[in-house]
Length: 207
Image 1: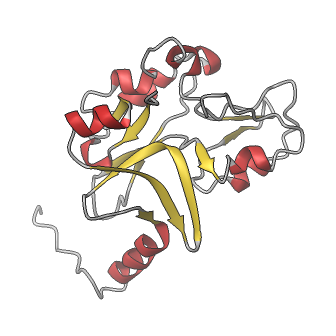
Image 2: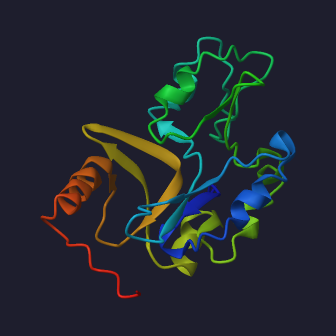
């Protein structure tokens, strides 16, 4: 059976924050958004990207692994849930363990909060709120075969952090030549750019 999941395509994001507004309607965290629209490099570009929980599968959810009280549960479908309020002790281990920097710690509530893929909707066959509201398809919900048939881009669910590879339920859409998302390679490329060895910032043409 094909598994429906979220596909994140930064090339389509226009920074409208519709996903954030829609996420606030989720019944499990009403009024708060678990999606963050980030500027990739505000100093040189207006490009934005939605940041959501990647729902790690291998290694299995580092946030859940480091929780000493098993407050973070994983559904049979592989969705990593937000911390259970009756169990969370506010240790923040999950915040530090997440390689993608996703979990938020609510100081007043003393509770970790994050995207749970709108589990109340997706178990009924509905799209998550963010994918439902996204006007450009930067957040797209469906299975791999549907994506390949309907969309351009190369979806990957492998991210490399140095020598550690993390496989995720959520896909990132990359150019066809990229086999996986290599964080260290991107950091080195950024460092080269900042040192002026790969790219020179142009002078502003608007006075």
